[in-house]
Structure formats: C-alpha cells, structure tokens
Image 1 (cartoon, rainbow, N blue to C red):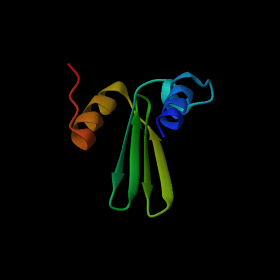
Image 2 (image 1 turned 180 degrees about the vertical axis):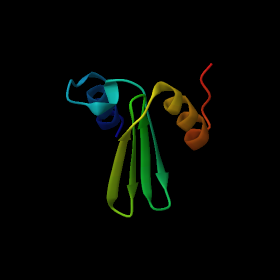
Image 3 (image 1 turned 90 degrees about the horizontal axis):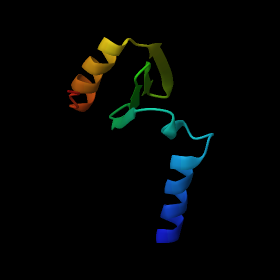
Image 4 (image 1 turned 30 degrees about the vertical axis):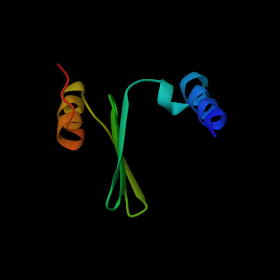
Length: 73
C-alpha cells in the first residue's frame, strides 16, 4: 500500500533515531551476508558474523568504487 511505503520513507528520512539520515551510506547484499559503507566505517556481515572497521576518507573513496562501482568526483 502506497500510504505504508510513504510512512516508512518519511520515518527513514526524518526520524532522529534512524541510522539512514546521519550521512552517506551504501549497502548491498552479498552471497554470504551484506556489506555497508559509511564515510567513517566498513561493516561486513559474513555468515552471521559482523566485522566493523574504521576507515579513512581515502579508504572510503576506494571502497565506494571497488565495492559499489561509485566514483566521487
């Protein structure tokens, strides 16, 4: 239902508790779990095990390109 989708979208964008409106985030599913990338960290969920590491701005740009094929200008 469109009203439900609109409500979810509004909460994701506006709710102060939402992790999705704090800064850029890229997420994708993988064969073994998922990977998420922010401008400060890389988080990988592999077969139920979570690994998170802090990254630099240069690493962010490199990972954004290698993992998500997104190149920042």
